[in-house]
Image 1: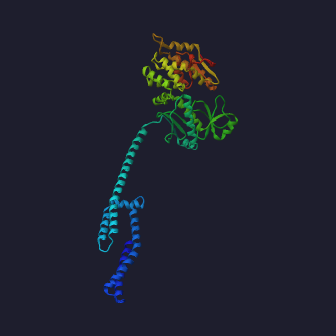
Image 2: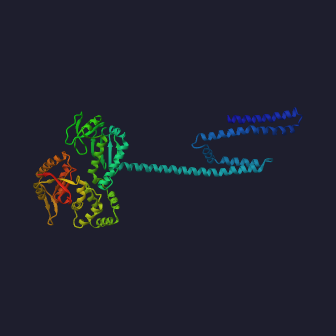
Image 3: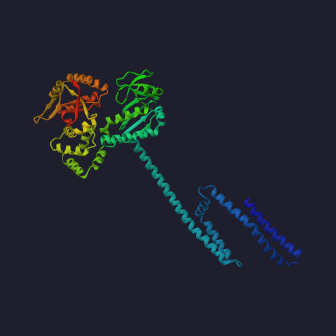
Length: 495
């Protein structure tokens, strides 16, 4: 259409010229030369007037065609194509120079336009090449970033989360409704751990895992499953303690964190349980309580070397200097980390790290075994330990009977200096002690009492080693770890 319109305009101009000469010569009595001069000028003027709109339409159509196959704005497309083919601008500049040299045509305007065209022919390709170079550099950078991201993704797949919570499909859907509450309570739990034990436990990575049973969850520490549980979605867990089962349809189960007696009922019976003063927990509370207890049981594994160094950096300069001195002369930094881990293994807080450093500085020059250092540190921290374990200023204790005190004392093999080198107890005695201890301890645990087991200082680590296999969370103290001024209530004796 554009091309046809231009051709039609040329034909009309030719008709005007021929027709005008004929009319001037035949009707107006003009000479042939005069008629040609007059009507050619008139035809050219008319042609210019009629062709200017056609020129604009043609230019607009050309720009649209140029824009059609490219991205970006129209001016970017036009200048990009001109930059890719600068020869067209140089040809146009040459034609303008030739027109300017023709007789009767103004020289300056044509030369000015020719200079502008030549300048554009030089400048536009430069800008175009710079843009191409920048685009190529960006493309290469994106490619390099993609390669780096792939490398990082591979590294990330190899790295394991320190604490990870895997949730089954149905349980995940249930907890998703209260996702913000879950995140808030986890954050609050980590803050409580930091205040209670003296270091910040790692963040918990929560992952939906459709490979595990839909109503279950798993807790991983350093990539290893350490706990799992099949949740009763849509039900609440009634904690029975010493009470009987409520008169409500349900099923008797075990609570996952402590193995306590529990009873599972539908959520619709919550109001009935409140009226009967039963303690119960929803799915999220059960999960978070279990997670909290798993973290407590794995505190030593969660205290990394980096965490220990960060704790030392927060000490006052004097204590940092003392730590550096003992770690370079008597005990290494990994040795210090081992001491802290053994304390955390028995849930002894390391929040008073400066006291621990002082105690290590006192004993480290005289002993080499980490266990001996830990026992001295515990004695120095007796006030803190008793304060954390007592209730209302009273410490409830369960004692070892004389028979078992003597049995453990005789099982300790000592060297010439009197230091314990070996613990050798008869397996039959060990089995009998396990039965007696289980009977006495379970009686008080089922009564809901919080207490500690007290034994002789030399035997304490070995009694703890045995009790830990039977009752993981039961604290074992020696007589010298009971601080002055602490009120004691003896619950009974293992005998």
